[in-house]
Length: 179
Image (cartoon, helix red, strand yellow):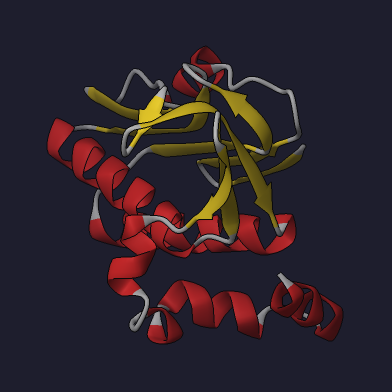
């Protein structure tokens, strides 16, 4: 598991076959000074476009993914008044009904917590180097997130992309380009 705790952010990329313990992340963001906790849990559906889904399989370039999520958290904090942020993403197989990604934010007021939570999941899906393979009864296919496709032309200029690439050493750049 790659875990990083910085300030009031907890970021974890979980190894294969490690389930997301949502209560852990809820406890992390909970504070007596906050009146709101917003969460998002992404789960594996049983069908997609008429196909029966067996599981999703996730792969990531973990050092880059953690750095990118840190950048997203920094951006969320600059836009909303937040107390704590927790982001967890599983790698490996995620069977139908299980959680693959979980985000929790806490703030004094619900608007900040809700808006930041939505922003974080949208940014994670659009720009973090985590790849998803959909395993169906009739085959497997690597999937691009719709958020990524909608912003494909913008990614070259995104702050997340710039900060991650500038922070990488040569070995990391080569590994990322090989993906």
